[in-house]
Image 1 (cartoon, rainbow, N blue to C red):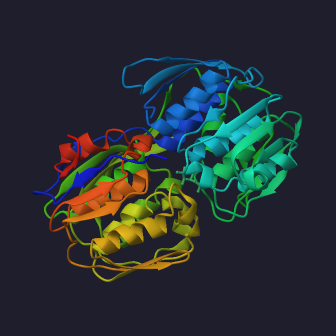
Image 2: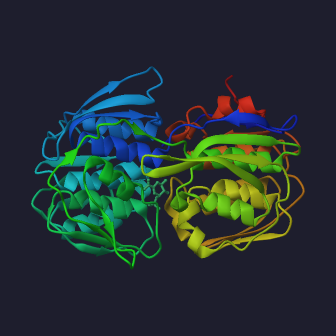
Length: 446
Ligand code: S3P
């Protein structure tokens, strides 16, 4: 696990100001490398997120014989020499997903299609997370999957090949499960169908057609994939929008620090990722949108955030999957808003990089917030400010660490955030970008 690394944060010395572009989208960066690697031809990718999670995905393909040229030192641009759907080589060693659930679950789908043996491992946090949700469907398609707890926990040993298509009715609203089945479906005999209890991020469905693989969505929301037998590298480079999940930290910080005005440039506005804007707007936040544009099959816009106006909200359960990664920092907004914020039907938060309901309740409570943990969410009654001079534990979870750094901007003194090094998994430049906007945050060793 990403244990270690201490952040010292807050309080903000003055208003947050400026315009920034946060790094590329994590979900799309994983998918772009995967589809490029499985294509015939060479794909250029720009705006790639060089976080540890995405680098783990790239490394897995390198370990299976795919050539990747990094086109700049920051690793935001790369050229992937695809080997085609049937060109991966058996890896000589275990494949390490590190902290990344998206990497391991989507790769389960890819590896289920391979006629060789592979073993997926990760860090201590990933070894605690549920994998039955992907092991079960790929087994039904014909892959052999072994792992601890009957295949529910890593390490997973996979021997694939000869897949047959299935109709999968997912019990969890999870884009990782949906994407795993669709990726396995590329190798299956017949038409794969996936339905989910609530719609989730659809980047896989939007990106596959760029590589020549059609995906249909039926009137009832079922996703339908009939394999085209090959993926083809697109002629044009794939551009990845800025990650709304990273932008939300600064949107909440700007809402909370008096006098702030921050512009978040060119961030992804896919409706399945835009729950944070619907929820913050419902809470009275002052958001303005401009420069709306399309990037590939995705949409982007500049979002300006001005301070003030936050009140409580009963979150619409339909919005939960569309903001699933943003709840740690939305809890921070709620902790300092007027009135009560209620979140239900979000038990998935308990099986993320940490138990995010428990981790945020513990950290915010130490800071003097009024938060009541529920099995599937939380009730939060806003207070005027948080307490400083305290220490909290991010539990090796990047989003807990960044959320508490935002909370600290409205504390009466500094907050020490332990086990924050995991920020490198999704947002290696969080601290310098936060500082550029005027947030008070630094690594303890700096
Ligand atoms: C992701 C899906 C979500 C999200 C994760 C990224 C993806 O997980 O929490 O950070 O890229 O498909 P679930 O699908 O498990 O909800």
